[in-house]
Image (cartoon, rainbow, N blue to C red; front, side, top):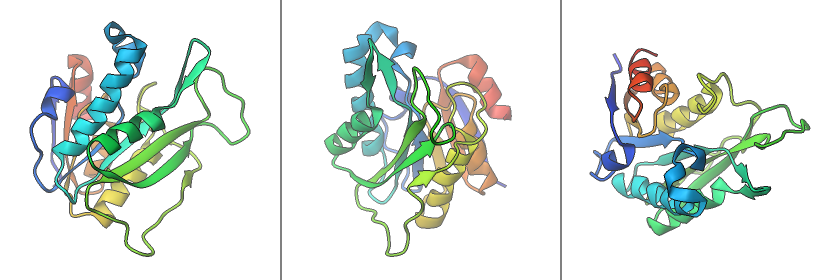
Length: 208
């Protein structure tokens, strides 16, 4: 039976130690509104540095998958896909795929947040085998456990790739929130490790 462990603590500190070779990462990093003390420019640097830290924490043939929704600040868009790629490049990793996840039906006008999210997968050594590609656009993100969660359809797509195309058998989410990625990992027969700063959310992620 797949296991789940959730630590109440700092996800960045958790990533400072190299992870075992059979561990992958699936996560969504916090918005600038969740770390206001950094300021927007400081948050951008922190964001890319944390992506790089996550990539470096993994074994060469493991993968890190980042699910991120762009945000608007002062009337300008902040492209989180770009911030993720900056961190991937800094870590010496490479992009395996970049998917777009529809947050609302195509053609819908949205305000404040876009109608799509990015999902990017990186690895140092692993490459897609011929015929291993999957759809670049996911038509729906699926049910969300809370407003900042990865949708379950997005989680299942990320976990399905890990289970099918890598040797990783434990999924780590260092910013796990209520544990959507952990639930999807367990449902696919993979062990899961979450880290969450909020005691209340960590407690819920253990029993999700």
